[in-house]
Length: 158
Image 1 (cartoon, rainbow, N blue to C red):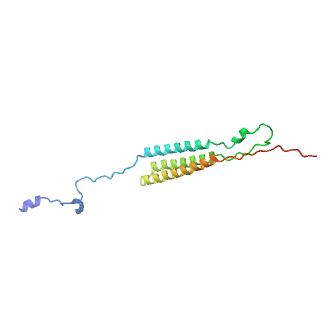
Image 2 (image 1 turned 90 degrees about the horizontal axis):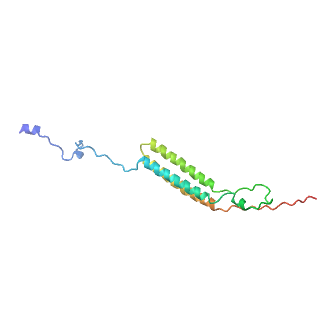
Image 3 (image 1 turned 90 degrees about the vertical axis):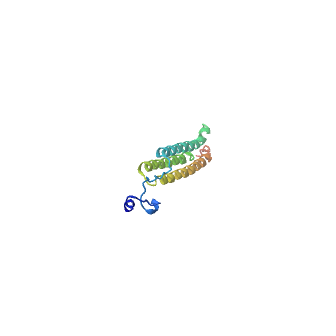
């Protein structure tokens, strides 16, 4: 009986609770995440969409459009000032989002830990900049430029 007790190995019922490693391989934790190339493709497509939208809104109004209907006589003796047009907020929006997109590229290719969190923050900032940029561009494009009408100056010399 003593010989059989030495050859018989008993394993604990719960190896995880006993603190001993089990013979089964450890289960790999699966992270559900988009692949980096897909994230960069989606962010680039968003940038192109916003750039097209704000530039389309900006082209509604031109800053000097009221000069096209000015009479051809000498009523306006010098070049007239142009009103602010909507291209400035459109270009600022496009450049801000392009800089954030470049930051996303840097994050994807350099970061390992917390990559998803940082990309999510960058995407949120891109969305916020796009919203503010579209509103600013639409506001600037819908503003009416002032019509400046100069009357001819009469010569009053004696």
